[in-house]
Amino acid sequence: MLSKRVGKHRFTGRIEEFSVTDKDQTAGDNNDEYGTAATLNYTYRYSKPLFLSVEHTWINSDRPGRVYAGEPADREERQLLLAVRYFF
Image (cartoon, rainbow, N blue to C red; front, side):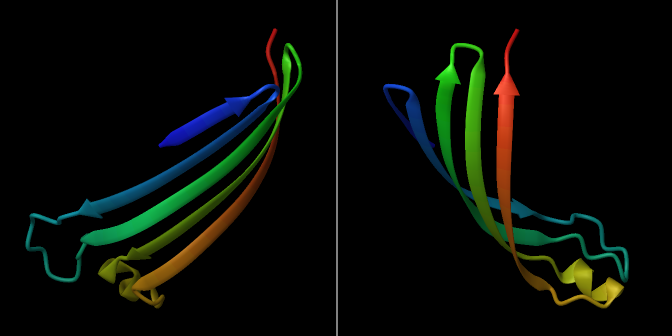
C-alpha cells in the first residue's frame, strides 16, 4: 500500500493477491479461490472533522465453487464508493 498526503489531499493505492486452499476433500464442495485486487482512493479534508472520499476497487478472482450456483468460476468485480466521514 502506498499513500501520499499533499495538503488537504490524500492519494492511496493498494494491490493485493489472495488465495484459499480447500483442505477437505468433500465432493461437490470445492472452496479453492485465487485472485488479485487493486484499490485507488482519493480523500479530501474539507475541514478538521469532515473528510470526503472516493474509492474504486477492482477484484478478479477464480472460485470453482461458484459453478455449483450456476455462475462462472471466473469473476471480475468493480466497486465505486463515495464517502463522507465526520469525526467528533
